[in-house]
Amino acid sequence: MTDRKTELQTLKADLQARLRRLQAHQRREDGAINRDFEEQAVETQNDEVVDGLEQESRLELSQVEHALERIDAGEGDDCERCGNPIDPRRLQILPYTTLCVKCAEQV
Ligand SMILES: [Zn+2]
Image (tube, rainbow, N blue to C red; front, side, top):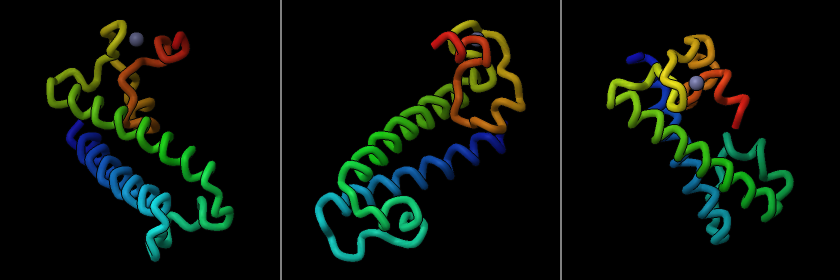
């Protein structure tokens, strides 16, 4: 669980950095796009793609923050909807999830 928290904090920092770059790109700031972002969007230089990435990153960031809150509250390993434990393998693949497989399928 400590590992998961560390992982989520890293993810959170990455997402915040990515959002800053996306916003800089939207404002047309020179040199805003750096290497790890290039593969995703520089080739297209398409505002719609950037908007989509920004929305995606925002959504993921809010999920990450929410998962961190639940971990801090001692509920990080339990499903938010049904209260059953979330499969640890699922948490490894999706560290920011707050739902078990069954509940996630019902969303
Ligand atoms: Zn559940």
